[in-house]
Image 1 (cartoon, rainbow, N blue to C red):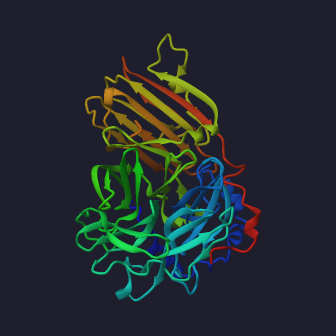
Image 2: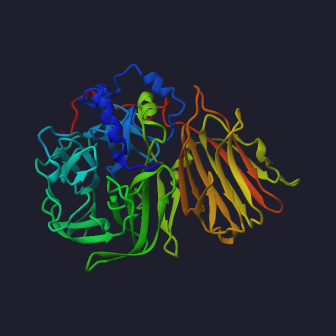
Image 3: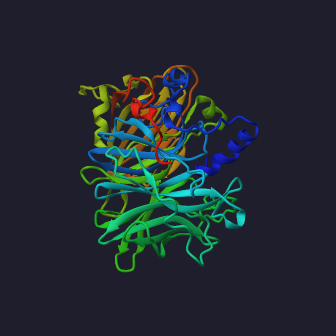
Length: 529
């Protein structure tokens, strides 16, 4: 499935035409005042330690920032239901990247403003005792004036600014006019959205996702000294499309969404989303010409993962977030009352060969509960239990599998204890050292020194996995019934190979599946209008 954010729109419009969409809610409190809370809290498919709103639709992470001793996560949110549309900025706060509390909606569309039809994605940056958000506002216009025409909408996209000097970042003041009202002259662009901002010396720099008709995706670069007056410089990075014809340029690779360019080690890294995946490039940024020269490239995650965004944590580590979309039909997640999950935080570094490395944030270990471990094949001298006895209850746990000096093909599987059906399968073959298989799909992974490390989190209907710190794949899986199945971890391995397995049951981050206690302040006036 292609996880373009607007793929969900056409079906939502059909529902609206049938009169099935409710009217816009005026504030976040009303989005939670529903008799369905108990049903949502008891839905076994809802994750217990991933961030998601208590109900309704979530997509892209927006402007994650560590501010005033707290981690703030903003995200695309529809207060009207569990389907894409009417984009607001939801808001949650955490002391540790793990435990989250919901706060009021940060940004809402202004009826007469440049964001009248949605506050799309963007970024946040600290300015002294203030934080600024730069985001894309969209407004319906005739097709001839639109920068986004996807078969469902004709939107004019502009870059807007909102500022907060509030300690908790719950009150925002929007500038009435866009700070970048038009795309660059002379460019026949395919889109104009998802700004990302950073400061270098006396200048603020801004990238905007875009593309050039018939040529491919592109990242536009601007600079400013005050965040209000922006000068267009040039295309800082670009690439070719996939050659397919599509109504939406994102599906053809001719539009790059959610670009971000940031330093990592002694290099720079560019991430962007297109054609249903998030891609990365590492290389050098010429500080004189401000042109990025890629040297290595790859895919951030091969599964259900899109619209990635990064931030710095309190220690200066680069943290990666992403949106985990649903893969079930719209009718199912709309009926469930919730859709979309924020990924777990991953720490990014670069290997000596320029390859992007990612590890789950160590802060997640605070959620570890009871543990089991095993070896396969089991040795007589082993003090650990047989791996066949290792299982995970309630689809809520962490799994680490390690192997060294592999000599034979093998497989690691998660199997439903009751039905015997395979939920997730990882195959490895030392004769094919450049790849592994995940649910039958080949993924590029060099098993250097024949070592294999699998780090996996299972949570409700989500499985996030990182292999050898180099390749990631996120899966959605769904099951019937009112309880999550018990999952057995099965390993197929032969002498003299040894695969060790360690499993932790994970603690939930709240007393129910609604992620965090909703702050009392939501019953006040909503902000960001």
